[in-house]
Length: 228
Image (cartoon, rainbow, N blue to C red):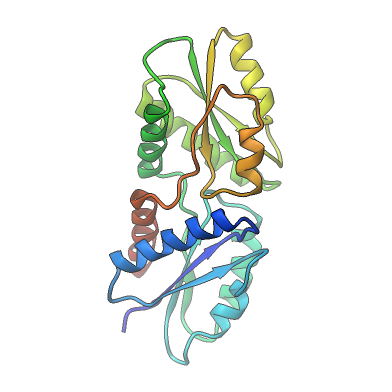
C-alpha cells in the first residue's frame, strides 16, 4: 500500500479560496490514482493537521505535503508537531516553493495580464509573508527564479510579517521609473492575503496560483521525492 498523502494547507474563510484548494487537491488525486489523498489544515478550517495525522490507520505510512508556498511557522511548528506525534511512519516534505514550475505559472499569469518587453514595466512578487525569516529567504529565491524566467528584475513585497510591504515595493518601482507595476500574486487561493495584494496599489494584479495543474504537479513531486 502506498503511503497516504496528507495535503496540508493553511485554511481560509473565503468560499472561493476553499474551492480553489479543494480543486487543487482534486487534481492531485487524479494524478495519483493509486494513492489515498487526505486534506488537512493548520488554521481556520477542519480537520486540523494533528487530527488527520493521528487518524492514519494503524501500520500505515503517511507523507505530509505542506500546500504552502514557503517555509514558516506552520511548517516548522504545526506540521512538525503533528508528524512527531504520528502513530506510524510519517514524514513532512518541504513547502511547495521555491520551484521552477511555480515560476512558469507566475510567468504565464503575467503574460496573460499583459506584461510585455517594455523596460518601463516592473514586476513585484507579492507574497503573504511570515514572521519566520526562512520564509523571506524562500520568497527571495522564488523572485530570482521568476526573474530568470522573465529575463527582467523582480522585487519582492509582503502582505504581512518581515520584509518590504507590497505597497512600498510598488512605490519603489515607480520611483525607479516604472510606468506600470505588475503584482505577481504569490498566494495559492483567494482570501485575506489575496485581498491585501489586490489593494497594494499595483496597476495590474495577477490571480492566485491554484488550482493550476503545475501547482498540483509540485505537490506530486514533493510526495514522490519523500518516498526516496
